[in-house]
Image 1 (cartoon, rainbow, N blue to C red):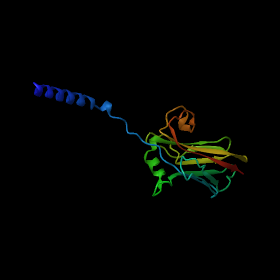
Image 2 (image 1 turned 45 degrees about the vertical axis):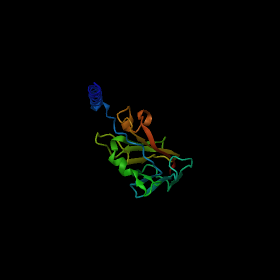
Image 3 (image 1 turned 30 degrees about the vertical axis):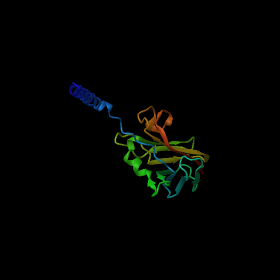
Image 4 (image 1 turned 90 degrees about the vertical axis):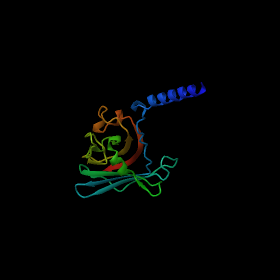
Length: 187
């Protein structure tokens, strides 16, 4: 009698476990946010001028503020082709997060927030023809200006949200991988 009861319990457990193993119970792959300690924007103007914006945060999301530098001013009305790099200098050896972002383009978008400094447009897209922002174009204001440029890398944004594909962060959602504000001068 005990032997039949044991087989019944074993068969019930096996049946239950098989039912629990359907595809609906398999969790989505979780893509973690990157650790980013250095952000570098390099903008090359049509006149050959190069402006580099750099942020180094030695402790990543720790309590220390990043060191932010800008190598020069932008020329009013000039068009600049830009690239951006993200690094984890805390890791040993250092990790180039730019490559990871490029490989996971559908899960990332970079936003360029500013007021009156000029216009940004995306030069790269993901497999769904939606913007990424690792390469971009910046057309500086035709009049001299001083202001701030905030660059934000969003992880898992809603790229089809209203105006997100044009660079408006308002409806992007997702989580922030990196955010840096640079002081900018248009001369």
